[in-house]
Length: 180
Image (cartoon, rainbow, N blue to C red; front, side, top):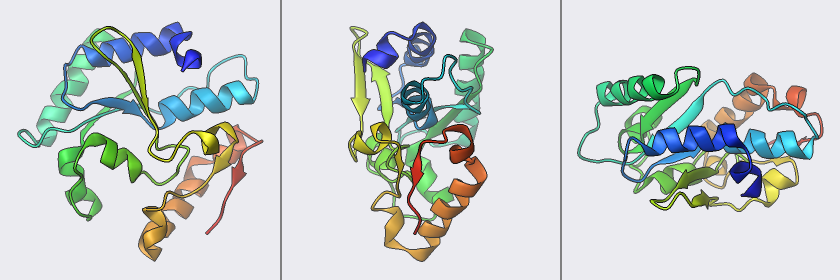
């Protein structure tokens, strides 16, 4: 947590997202994982993320248009950040699975345990971490599928494709990729 709290840029991004006052929101995935892996690898500069994933859970308003409007609002606040905003209350349709029950439930079903991480701040600006599968894998540089991914061949194929496409080993050479 101190890694993020001591990173002014990361805290600026988290505070920007908090201004939207979204229900059950988190900044997740690579935003958190990359910071940990960069630090363990001793990188002087942070790895630039392809996007900053902001997720939330709102069953009342599930239009993609709303997500785009929220992205536009974040771009007004911090225009140099590659924002991606998704309402996890609608993502089960896209992912062809049972509906999520919360944003944390969605995070628990991310493909990799090292990616199944989220951060946000509370009303007092205290940093909160969610890590449904713990932080051992990300700290130990182990890239493993989540239990949800291991439930079907279709999902394990998604994990394998991501390992190739994302080329994490090419960026963070010390990670150990667990194959299925």
